[in-house]
Structure formats: C-alpha cells, structure tokens
Length: 157
Image (cartoon, rainbow, N blue to C red; front, side):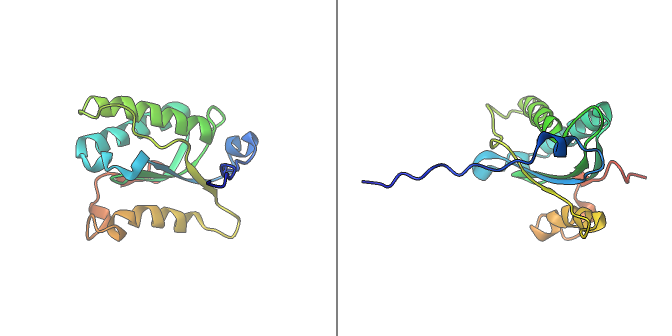
C-alpha cells in the first residue's frame, strides 16, 4: 500500500504584495510538460506582441522578457490598474488564443507560475541581464542580443 502524502501547495504572498507598484517581480511561466510550443517563431512572436499590447493597456512595467521554447520569463512591476497575478492570468489567456491562429491545438500552460520579488540587496540590472542572457545560456543563439523574442519594454530606445 502506497503512503498518502498531502499535496505540496505553493505558498503565495498576500494579494497586496502582487499589487504593490513599488515591487519588482521576476516571473517564470511554464508550458505543461515542457513542450516547446514557442519553438514555432510565429507563436513566439505572437506572445511578444500580446505582451507589448497588454503591458501598454494595463500600464504594467516590463523591465525584461524572454520567450523561450517552453517557458516565458518576465521582470515586471504591477500598475495601479493591474496586479502581477491578474497580468499573468490575462497574458496566459491571450497568448493561448493567439497561438491557436498558428496551429496550436488546445491549452498548454502549466497551472500557476513561479515568482520571486527582488529584495533590496538584489539589483534590477542583474535580474534583467539574467533574463536576457537565457537564450545564449540555453544554446539557442551565440549572442543573446540576436534572439528575436526577448527584450525590454521599459528600457526600449
């Protein structure tokens, strides 16, 4: 007989933390089963377009983003109009709908997301550099600057 263990639940901070516009949050959103949905360049480009549009509409600050084949990284701050939790939920929904236009069938997001709030001793620059270097670390490109599905909205020229 197998021992029954309680399911591990992800502890979330209070909703107020996710709505505090002074906070900067690093978010990772994963595709269920790590399937490479965003290896399709059109699907990845659609995710970036959704991110840019949604961030502008909700006035959310996106310091860095990177759409990898099986996950998405964001470094962001919520706005007065939109918390981190609300933004991630809307982003996942809109990206899913966008992907259907490019042949993706069904849903693909893993439930929830991973988050980490930057502490006073952590620098925004380090978090941004980490996210933007992800494609080179993963071997997708030699030079991270050449990866077409990453960047910054907040620091855009």
